[in-house]
Amino acid sequence: MTTATSIQTKLYIDGKWCDALDGKTHAVINPATEEVLWEVAYGSRAETKLALEAAAKPKPCQAGRNSPHGIERKFSKKPLTSCANALMPSLAL
Image (cartoon, rainbow, N blue to C red; front, side, top):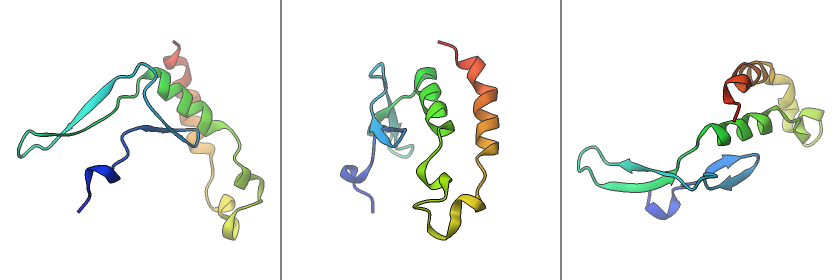
């Protein structure tokens, strides 16, 4: 059973947990009881843009170092980069 203290309620962007830039949150509701279980950070276009920019940056393991069993060769960042490039124009602030 998961407890409320073990639930992360922030956004994970560029290797860090952070609140929404505007401080907005979104209620996570138990549909059976309609009880609010948690308030989680509510990401907007600004956070999406930051996350896409962070995802497009080279990571240390992509250079072949610090990567167990050559995992960088098994996964390509091309689909993510293509998706990020397609979304960026629509995220203009």
